[in-house]
Image 1: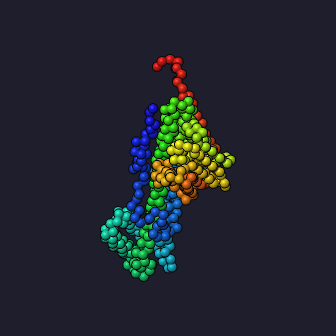
Image 2: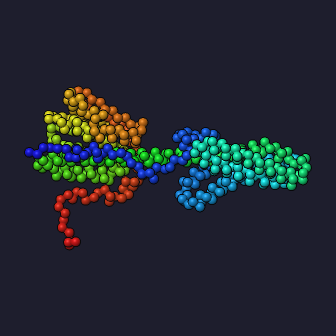
Image 3: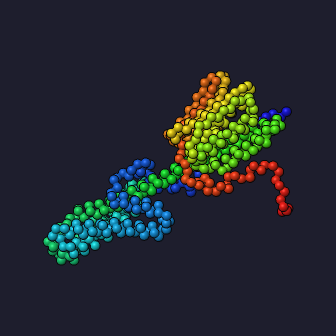
Length: 445
């Protein structure tokens, strides 16, 4: 009589231990500001109110449905810059025209001074900082920063000299005292530079944070997908092994197992890719698996599944409970020549689900159902729980001389919006029930 063997046992580990591979385009590029701003921290300086307004306006623009138009983005950016410089111009005119100063003289003086301030601001913000400071080329940043300082002071002295010649007509008493305060001019210019740099770095930090969050979500989803691809063949291999044993015995139960296997595959094909599924659907999936096991073990194993009434619409991540059930049959039943038992219990209390699986064991089973060597199921479950329910789940595995117990507690998700799962009702109930010979077609092809 042929020896019962486990299908795919020699290749299973190679098939399910593939490393996660995420396409490079799926991970957003991390800008050079990463060394300035650690993830989850704030910018090194307090961003002024106007820079916060710039960040919020850009954030609002990025989230608008029609924000894909680069032309509209450019117009908004130009409007923000123009508004900033109009505010600076107005403040300078007021500052240099205060007291006994002439408003006309102040207007002309600021008109000459503003281009110097703008040139200095854009040089520092868009040349020195991105090319040198953010690239950690601190020596060149210091050198070119000094050149910029000297150049801006020189140009401001030329502006003062032009005002002295053309506005005051070489009469020092006719000039506003504020225009002769060279130190004040330099400080005022670099206050504007500081404000602009703060806004720019604040915006860079905001973008970096969003990209880091997006990259984290991408990696998390990729890891979940990888873990799901492990669970699916794992369940299928175990069920095929059951079917293989029945076929070897020429059991009449094999056709029923095939039909129930079709139900398992239907769930894995059309439900497992959903983020969350109804808890009742997960319960039915477990019942189908238990029906297959009952056909295999017959009356040698006592199998019970007690379920409390489940709230309508309560949802859970798919394929979270089945690894605990498989583990019980794998270690608590398959190696037993005598009677054994498996007990399942599921109850819901205040939007929390409590699921327990108990199975019989022998006192000398020192290595069986050790979570560190239990194969794919339990380690995979631990990783998925950590990704889906971080700090919100409780998985407890205990054993004594006669019983192994697995307990899982986690929060349930509220009902999904109407028609979220039934928007395409034809996608689930396929013709998998027709597993017999195909009916002849009307005409040969």
